[in-house]
Image 1 (tube, helix red, strand yellow):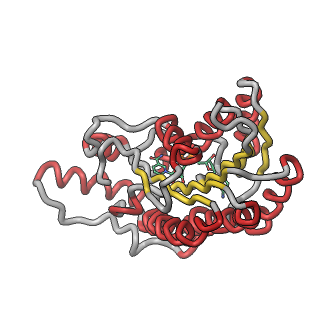
Image 2: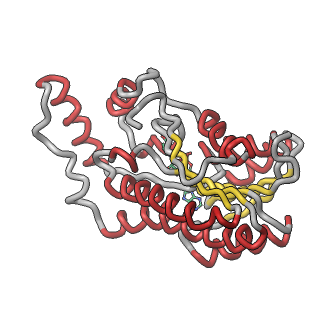
Length: 272
Ligand SMILES: NC(=O)c1ccc[n+]([C@@H]2O[C@H](COP(=O)([O-])OP(=O)(O)OC[C@H]3O[C@@H](n4cnc5c(N)ncnc54)[C@H](O)[C@@H]3O)[C@@H](O)[C@H]2O)c1
């Protein structure tokens, strides 16, 4: 077992990619702190970890709230006494019905006339609240959890931090300026912190997946957009959460001992 007796904390581990990562760690012997805002989803993941013969600790907390994050790390330390691995995975994506409708119209226009003259008008219509929430969950959440983790890992001289970015943060996803900005910032944050803390034996890297079939996409994609997303993915399909979890396992293991501040794209060849 690759992670026997290691302690891993995974945010947003109630479903999708985070859940797949939590289960993968448990299969390899790690004790897993399962964080999410959805208490019911936490329970399911913790129950599945138990079925695998693993040990899971569920903690409901909103990663965009510094105090809740602080308390979560305190509970983790109380229960397990240390933290070896942090995966900053929690995330949200939102699109309004209008943007989705205009997106479909843009794709239609592109497919019939070969060029696009309309816009999804996502940025000009975005509210402060929508912008702030996406940045708060992704970017502030990643910062708050990283800060707490470094207070443990820098002092003990080892640790692995894995940040979930996206190809949206590299190429920009039209219609999702908030999400793309947050993911781009997470990539820059990863590179900066990685160079800061590797001297203390703490590894920081990012994963920037392409299209992965999870509940997140129901808020982001119409059937037409989903079709286009697949056609723009050279491998010809969306990825699975388990295919992203495999990259997280690599970055959390000793196999990645010379990988610092990098962004790895499990994307089926899309963009990155
Ligand atoms: N699905 C994709 O195509 C894709 C592609 C690239 C990157 N990602 C990123 O991967 C990560 C996981 O996405 P997913 O597709 O599994 O999404 P998902 O919606 O299936 O799961 C996200 C989980 O995060 C939890 N969450 C949301 N806000 C939270 C908060 N404030 N605090 C704690 N937990 C919170 C949700 O309850 C949910 O369980 C996200 O950061 C996402 O941006 C996803």
